[in-house]
Length: 135
Image 1 (cartoon, one colour):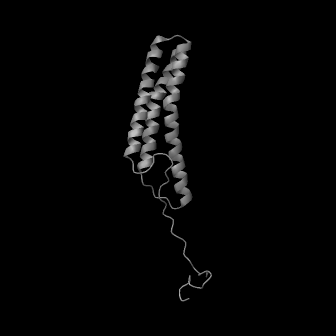
Image 2 (tube, one colour):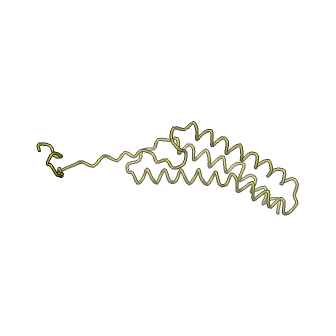
Image 3 (cartoon, helix red, strand yellow):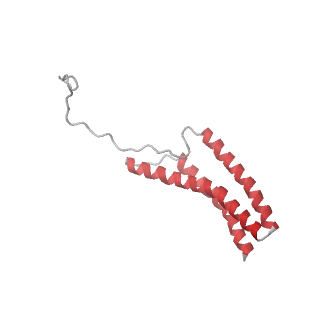
């Protein structure tokens, strides 16, 4: 049963982390139609959460798996999780390269909203009387 749990951890890292990274990158590179600023901020926050979760799990799953494999002295899984730590470094390198190639930051970006600018219906004069059309 212990080996099954370690296998679940390993395959969660192997397939789950790249899936989350791909979903996050697709969301980050897409141009959704968002009617309001609040929707745009919610979209950006969700994208940030997906990418941050993937980056945290990229290191956490192999580290926990290596610790558990070491505690039960399972050489097979120790080798696999050492390899996955090396793979985690490669994933961080790939994300860093993608971040350098992007025009805007990967995390902390909010897409453009399509909310119209509010119409100005009256003029509010300032001192001197020169701020409103016609004096």
